[in-house]
Image 1 (cartoon, rainbow, N blue to C red):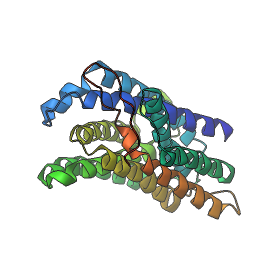
Image 2 (spheres, rainbow, N blue to C red; image 1 turned 30 degrees about the vertical axis):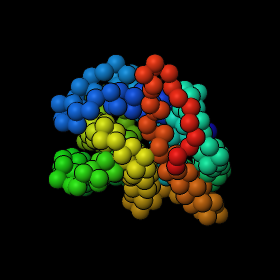
Image 3 (cartoon, one colour; image 1 turned 120 degrees about the vertical axis):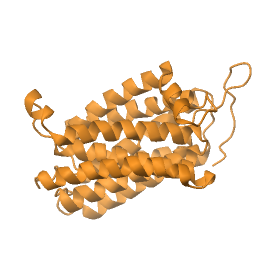
Image 4 (cartoon, rainbow, N blue to C red; image 1 turned 180 degrees about the vertical axis):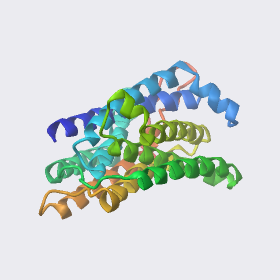
Amino acid sequence: MLLGLVCALAAAVAYGLASVLQAAAARTSPDVSARGVVRIVGQWRFLVGIGMDVVGFGLQMVALQSLPLFVVQAALAASLAVTAVVSRLLGLRLGAREWTAVAAVCGGLALLGISAGSEGGTAAGHGFRMWLIGATVALGLAGLATQRAPQRLRAPLLGLVAGLAFGVVAISGRIIHDFHPLKLLAEPALYTAVVSGALAMFFYASALQRGGVTMATAMLVVGETVFPALVGLLALGDHSRPGFGAIAVGGFLIAVAAAVVLARFGEPPATTPAGSLPSHESSV
């Protein structure tokens, strides 16, 4: 279990660094078309960010083998605390509210750490895997359908769809237990994880490009934490340690709420014409 916690926190660091790189790439192009998003994904910063995402994903998969989904996903929400601290090093001044949120994320994760039980023992059958495939297809269609939404709603809706898709990635990883190459290639959950991950990155890049970064990232955090946590509890038998249920719920809510407060750090500080990073007070 200790290895799982370490891997979950290491994954949060990798994802936090990735978000800084990906957001920096996303804000370099005003083109909000599919072609513009593809151009952004081809930039070196976005590609390095994807590499960090791959590292984070591997660590996340290790964590999911021993910890409940609600613990792992709340730990991953701490990636925004990492992003906030990195933004501070790049010249963005954190206000008291942000430092409080960073501390709250750490406190929430500490509560989850002491209350975490082992992963649930409920086996996921063929029907559950088909449900994951259906959810992946539905999220892809939902992301495309956001183009018909009012302009002000597109970024948060894309963020939510991206978060739910990341949730499908976590759920898929949670039910993969046999990593023998032949068994893995025949595992439908592997493909739902890969496709959902690609959809999540594409839709999140599109949300960042549309400018509503704070709300989009907040919606992403909610989607990627609450959704898989509920699935783990209701369908996969996840649980806390006996007698620690209230502490687990409190830790989860604190960590997620604090991550939402830090949502604006899904966007790096803008550069000045001289290329330096201005320091300014929090506007959240």
